[in-house]
Image (cartoon, rainbow, N blue to C red; front, side, top):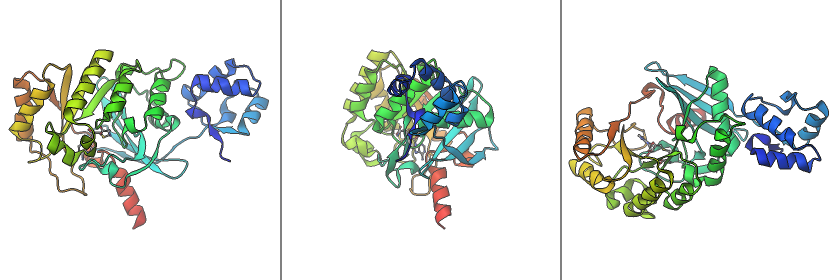
Length: 347
Ligand code: SAH
């Protein structure tokens, strides 16, 4: 039987484990701090616990670590992309970006994805499995250790749909925010979703004021359905209502992600319609130049058009910015590195 990963356990779950072993529950806090603050790799490293206790724990428990398979360093900026190997040999990717105000990590929440968005490389082979809370946390810990840095911001915008792995993602959010852990403020965390409306309501009720980012990509239901399959289940009106609820509950500004695809969603009428549907909302539109991926015929909008698009939004009083492309020389877009790696390995 495989051992239980203690990195997946919240402080109160660790307390229950210690109680079940007839040990003092305050040991749990010591262990939690050593795992999540001191970033140790093995139970045997937790020397604040007696040798006997560590041996006893090792019978059924372990601290499982993901390992760096490959790191790509961008020559254009300080972006670094990581490929990680999981214990079951699955592979995920994460990105480290440096800004004036700190370090942001873009983390994966699933191996693969089942959302099927047309322009996204992460979803091309479907969902393999959900990541555990410990595996999401470990992307942070391994990168911090590798670069000897402290991460200040987190975006859940790597491979996977975070709201399709709701329980583990929620656990991750609470653990990364815990004061005995990394204590990263909810305001420094962004979760991006393609629009799993039911879960947006649940998230709004959790009392964790993270920034919600919505992958809009088209303001017209018929066209959105063609590129984002979940739009067949929830229409834009339902999505916007969920956003309104989120804003009302959290008082947080929503960010709408909008990947500009030439001739598909970058027309004047798209910009006008976006302004119509989000006017009056506490929101911001983040225009993203499409990262060309091999599997599709989509092309990115030219720069001139991107600026025009942004100006239409600004003229209508909508907050809009164009996302700077980072790490474009190292395949820093969602899912591309993992796919290239798997493809080359098979050849
Ligand atoms: N599943 C979540 C988070 C992962 S994708 C979501 O859909 O939001 C993170 C962002 O990258 C999303 O806005 C997604 O639509 C966008 N994206 C995916 N592939 C892209 C590509 N080839 N070029 C630009 N943006 C892309």
